Amino acid sequence: MKNSENGFIASCPVCANSLFRATPMSVVYGHCPKCGNQYKIEFDECGFHAISQNPAQKKNTAKNTEFADEKC
Image 1 (cartoon, rainbow, N blue to C red):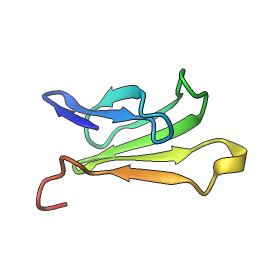
Image 2 (image 1 turned 180 degrees about the horizontal axis):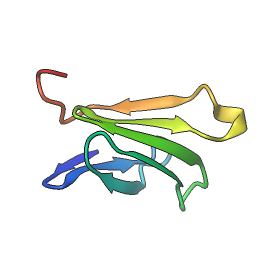
Image 3 (image 1 turned 90 degrees about the vertical axis):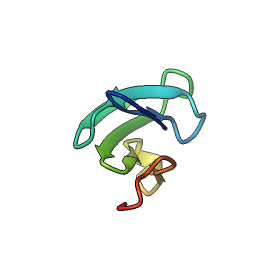
């Protein structure tokens, strides 16, 4: 995850491919073109949560707050 002026850039938790750019409080549905996994990406003030939409991986989630503020 990178913190840019326009929000955050989420990366795939499986292959680290850059996926989406969004502002806090956004939700993006999509897939990774590199590994093919489908995700629901939820952005908040602290970073993002990647929730797998693949039936076999429903329990796998990732949270990245590498650049989070102290309030998070």
